[in-house]
Amino acid sequence: MYHLETYFTQMGNRKDRVTGAISYPIHLSTAYRHEGLGESTGFDYTRTKNPTRSILEESFQQIEGGAGCCATSSGMAAIQLALSLFTSGDELLVTEDLYGGTYRLFEDYQSRYHILCHYVDPLDLAAISQAITQKTKAIFVETITNPLLTKVDIRALSKIAKQHKLLLIVDNTFLTPYLYQPIRDGADIVIHSATKYLAGHNDCLSGLIVAKDEHIYQVLADNHNSSGATLSPLDSYLLMRGLKTLPLRLDRQVANAKRLREWLEHHPFIHRVYYPEVGAMISFEVSNPTQVDQLLRHLNLISFAESLGGVESFITYPKTQTHADLPEHIQVSRGVTARLLRFSVGTEDVGDLIDDLTQAFNKIN
Image (cartoon, rainbow, N blue to C red; front, side, top):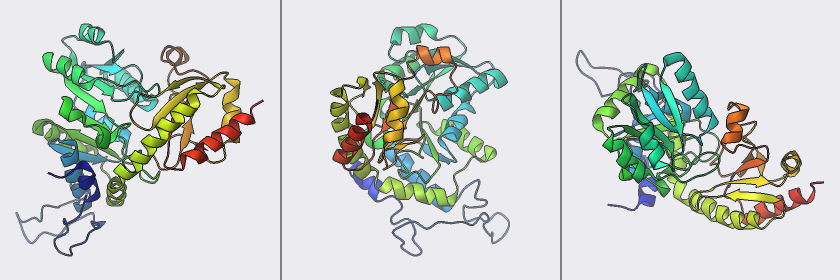
């Protein structure tokens, strides 16, 4: 057994037995020749299986500790693949503090396919247990909620799920398997928007979904092939390349985030800082909503952009960006206020990030 950092670094190495390529090749072919009837190399059509994507899936499955992995064309495609396990009339319990795009998808499934979602406080285990009915099929949570960054107790939720024979589906985008592996604490399905920390360079739209159980994986794999939401060979290569440096990047990002959290907590313009003591995401509220636009306009180094997890630092305004699809009353009830900002901390020198924030705050009237 090697350490986790070694598995990431060695991803794809020694897999090309023909050439010995250290960096696994990009197989762009969409079709594969057969010698005759009943004879196959194991590859027939790239939507079904591709050599580059297969190496990515096999490697990531091993890291997460699951039975199988599907690489999808985006993180939302991975969530939609998980939803393909359910039918009309099924019900899900979903964390109420949730990425806005996931909320939008769940609401669409409620109205179009009658797969009902009941939103719950992920920390209120008693309320979660009471919300379970005969129609409940799964619990869906984020390990670190978005955007208020609440750390969820996956082990406690897995006990409830097992007691009621429910699937526990976990979006682990904010932590990655480098910081946490939910399957080891009882999760049945783990999802990643691999676009974010896993790829890490804001240039590869991708998703990953890992199942603990072989049967569930086979159902997901069949639906993955049928839906066509598969990751391209080039993006599979880019994602593998990004994964090789994930430990190096994330160590730096986490260290930067902890230093920035301390700095923000002592700034007079900051009303509140949200940080779960793990990961590289920070959310914070400024003292007055009128300060938001001025702050964003005066940043020189940190980008005002709608994403996270890359090497470059981003600040996002959830109210009009990531959570814009939430109705106003739901935004208010979930803490998505007009003064809330979400900070994806990058790998830059932390002193430079602090200097950029300092000069931007100093220009606020």
